[in-house]
Image (cartoon, rainbow over all chains, first blue to last red; front, side, top):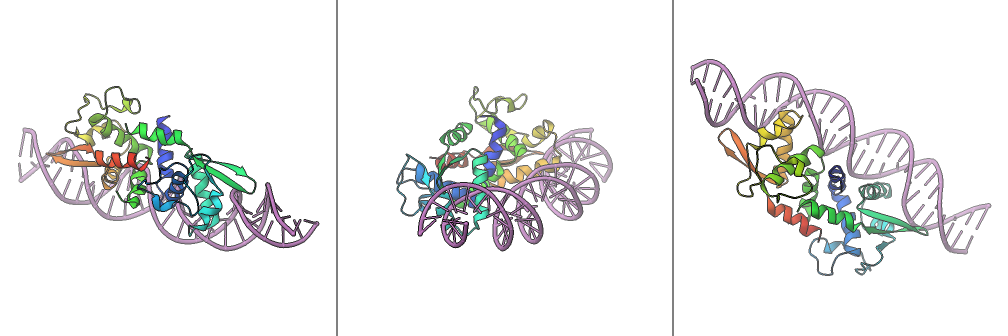
Length: 111
Length: 111
DNA sequence: CTAATAGTTTCACAACAATCGAACAAACCC
DNA sequence: GGGTTTGTTCGATTGTTGTGAAACTATTAG
């Protein structure tokens, strides 16, 4: 990972609302049950999967945040643009998952 | 570490110049010799210490960046404000070191 | 005391970011 | 086809950030 990529990644996580979105996706597809930070962000009715990402992520996150859809759309774009999440269409909605490689890069960066 | 602290931390690292400053302090006082990212940021004449932080950090970083002193001062303030570094006066200059606890918090956050 | 060096603070400004509403496009349902 | 749900894009507004110049404070040197 190029050094020049890190500012973009950190910027994507530097906004409180966007960080919440990231956590919701991260914790629903990656986190162990008892993990501390962000356990309050587990989406309703979603078990911790690890397998296939979060389905209907956009809609469901819209339902539990007080931001407009257009704003949330922008935030998704920026998380994708930083490489932190990927979204694939599933009919009318999207399935989103965290890019573990990027998360690991951050950890390496702080080694 | 409170969840609400993370955006501030990530914001501090989201600017390229500020990230470089952080790396210079981090790598000079913390990094193992062969570490990959940021090895090019080792300050001239500075051995990897781990013991006492970076002395004359402000002056020396001014000398190897093309930003004004006032801008660099602002960047230092923000890194301190995020808790990422601490600076203690040593006569006319400052000795700066990275706050390892905060770095570890970021790693935990990504667990 | 005077001069020099190190760093801070204030001010201004241009660039960028966050947000929303409205108009739009894409996929689905009937 | 017509309506609904899902998401995007555009335009506007408001707030934040990065930057430097200039005036300032603090410490050391002579």
